[in-house]
Figure 1 (cartoon, one colour):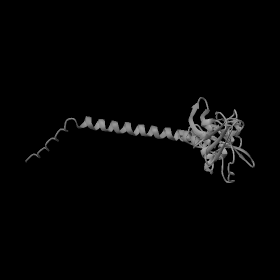
Figure 2 (tube, helix red, strand yellow):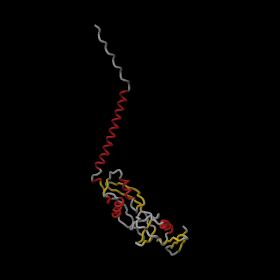
Figure 3 (cartoon, one colour):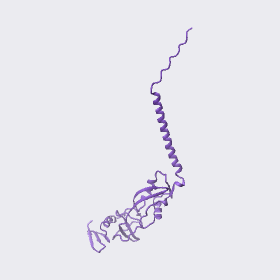
Figure 4 (cartoon, helix red, strand yellow):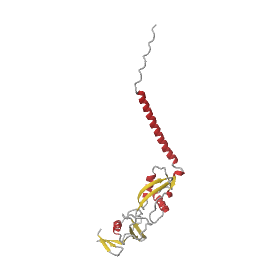
Length: 221
């Protein structure tokens, strides 16, 4: 009686296969773990962001007010102009651009220099304001413009500023922060900055200036 032949032994696994597989599995596990931790961190921020201790009232922002007003009034105007909420979240990833846009929309603000968060829950905003350089008399009162001819708010001081004579009336739909529609006002602003006269008036020959000491100058610009 013939004996059954034994099956030949299985060939040994290729050398180095198992270590490579182990490395691949380890790297995959590590990548999955890091992704999971990142996801949990984002979810945690979203979860704790709305809590009261991370909420800061808009009125608590630290900043210098523009001339002629106080910080409380200024912040109220910023909120109204930008249609911003009464509070914001410190963990909001868009906090800096949101506040920058809100303050930049105010007609007094020339530039938002920085938005910083200071412990524990303090927001400080550094601003550069427009400077009134020219007084433009109107029937309803005097208005001020900056060096580029942008109309400043009614609270802008006009005492001691060069006064533009013969200025056209300001259209009723012109808002503070907008360029004065009349070209003569826009052109008068840099003349006022350069010469600092008491009054100036546009004539066919150029700008007629009356200086603080009473001297008259004719500037062909």
